[in-house]
Image: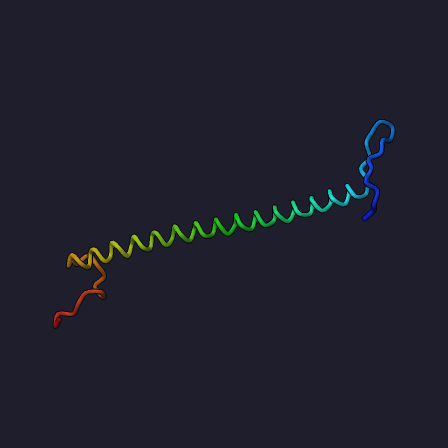
Length: 86
């Protein structure tokens, strides 16, 4: 990294020094890394929401199944019914 910290004027335009260029490159690199991490976190959150939706549906299905079994209804699966000798 160079020690030149001044900004020079060349034909009325400001030129960026080597130190500023290095800092800019570092910031751009960090920004690119953060964008990548943000995308990965977004994908993980989307997957978790999908899984949560499936689990909620499964829980609701189990609740309904337990309610119908508690009512003594025959709406359930015949394999789930008690045999006659009970």
